[in-house]
Amino acid sequence: MSFAEVHVSERCVGTLAAGRWFPTARNQRIKHTFHLGLTKEEFLFFFIIGVLYEFNECAMPFVEFVAGWISGAVGLVVGHPLDTVKVRLQTQTVYRGIFDCVVKTYTHEGFHGFFKGMSFPVVSVAISNAVAFGSYSNALDYLTRSGYNNSEQSKQSSLTAVFMAGCFSGLAQLFVSAPIDLVKVRLQNQTKSGGNKYRGPIHCIAVILREDGVKGLFRGMWALALRDVPCFGLYFLPYELICRMLTEKGKQPGNTAVLVAGGVAGVVTWACATPMDVVKARLQMCGGGGRMYSGVLNCITVSVREEGMRVFFKGLLLNSVRAFPVNAVTFLSFEMLLRAMTDSPQD
Image (cartoon, rainbow, N blue to C red; front, top):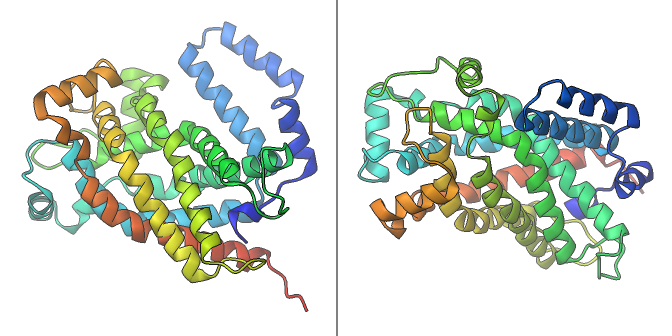
């Protein structure tokens, strides 16, 4: 089953089309709570969580949730060591390059050092991947039914619809992935020489909430949005395009097609995402031992002034090398799990 073939119920599409995300009573309770003293950031946080909950309660099949969790966890384990090196190169200036970072990390922290910050994303990837994959397939179905699909084939969406659905999924998962990614980056940057401010992911969250409140969990979110919204569109676009090129008409993509398409999609996406990924990582380290920036524009200006334009390509090689196997494995495992859990023998 490809992403273009994942459909949702008529009831949910009708609900989304009408814009009725919440029952009236629940809307009233949220508005009332807002007036009782929540900040705008806190209100936005709880509002988005409610939207995502209702969206996935309505339209997210359980098999997609499970497939997204397992495939995401597999991809994380495969790529986390290189991701740790990438994050350190982007946020610290003590390393001369990739090899120097790898040697120093292993020398001072051992093999365990490459897996710092991995436990929290692995546990929570069920939510972020479920939202990403689920919102993509549901948005694609909605766009196809709403006339955004120019294709005359009922089972194949237009590439424009694929891109728009991908951008929507990037926006939807943003509010789940921002706190997860923040904790991961903070833990990855902890070294023995710099001291350990956080004892683990739960302690990290507690410290951030105590020091900065709920909005502290979304530090760097604007940079993350500038990275993820367009790049999620690019993420699904080459995947669908290559799957169609490598698949005979009327048939489902084979494992080879999914593997190649997923790997290429990851490389293309990260090549475009790396500049804003650098800015995002640096903003996330504000308050966590990193340099302080007033915002996205200030971070870009200061970074260019001190390190030149090459600063935005720190970690590009690692991102590209890591992206192909990680995304190939993620897409392939997701597709295989969906087929295993949903396909029934037919004559």
